[in-house]
Image (cartoon, rainbow, N blue to C red; front, side, top):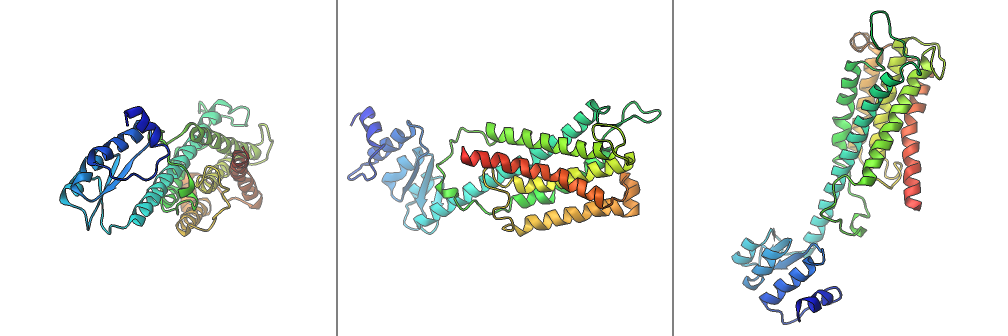
Length: 317
């Protein structure tokens, strides 16, 4: 066959007989020319050229020759083809967890940046009035932002890396190797979720302050504590929303015990900052009452429900 005929044939043919080393090499190249990622398995000297040319050359560790092992990218120690399937599944799971990690960290950090940015730009609208001698009033103090990063960027983020692979991961078609780790759709999720997080936090702040869009009756210290706690809770909710770009956060909710351990630990540490006197002084917080907690939980839940709506539409579309 000439090259064009062979390229057409490899789209349909699954079994080849009486092939020489040159034929194997041509089959690999014909598939690669059509944009396929080609894995080649082999054990003999005659397989070496195709093993070297393939994107992933897999040699047999028991029956394979030294030449085939040297030409391959991977050596199958047990000569069991099922091990290749398990390796592919593990690789897809690892890649998926990297995406979860990026989705969570970037969306949470976008939320923090937007809280500070919108809090300064719209300070007058949400009731932030500078005190005497201060040029502006910040929605959160620097120590609070550092504490949020310490709580959420450590335990919960690392626990996402221990998430089990999606049970349907092997039913998905192979991804384009040229595609970025963060797709345009993923960027939209990151920016959208970060915006919801910021708006919910600032509205909780506004609801406590006497002036602003939602008049309240609390002090600046109380308002900051509410906003601070809302941002922490919103990011802890976000960690569950970041586990999938389509599946509901409630699916497999208790499948990762490490994630729950990290979330519970972070919540307890936030309670320490809010209620223990020594930490109150360090972080400029005040104790919160039941009404304040209801406000924090309601605002933080906006991240969950907005994410659920987006995922529902995506599944339907």
